[in-house]
Image 1 (cartoon, rainbow, N blue to C red):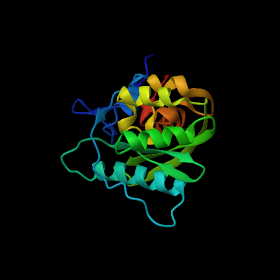
Image 2 (image 1 turned 90 degrees about the horizontal axis):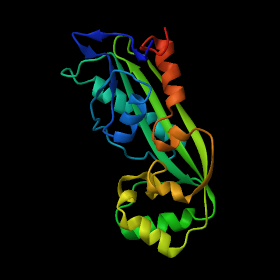
Image 3 (image 1 turned 135 degrees about the vertical axis):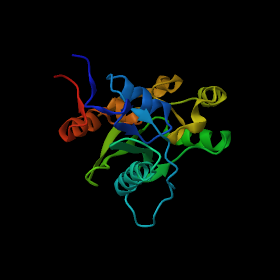
Image 4 (image 1 turned 90 degrees about the vertical axis):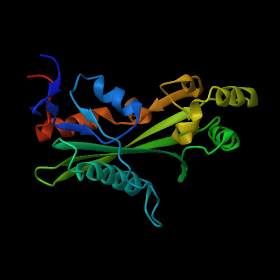
Length: 206
């Protein structure tokens, strides 16, 4: 049997991805699930004293609950996620310009960094939330100035945390990863599907 969502309401899927990220949408669709997409506009500010893991889990919960709180949005299970790149314990967000992108990439050159993604599944019917975080270690090769400049010229770094996309042109920089690949793309798919199956939101194989 093909993978599918557990059920629908009036033809509308009960599973909702609370994200505008095309990468998260593509990952979830890759296993054949039936879901709708509604972008969250929950604020993404950092809270002083918050650990990186607490940060991504909180934002994941906020995104899922914010979309679930809209009465015009149909659905039962809402998936939220947030991804950050960590150089040591410094959070690298999306670069504001080419200069910042170049600085980020130079700081990651020839060394390892962590990609941390939070995920949350909010059940609108019960009001319960299952959430967690996944960490993946990524190692870059030594980058030349021309490689950095050429990559930035593609435009790919500008809407990506850490200024790169492992699923895009940026893969040329990646020597190795230790952990979940989908986590680096933006959604720890194995963990999210496991939660959805446990909650009865999807059945991959029946």
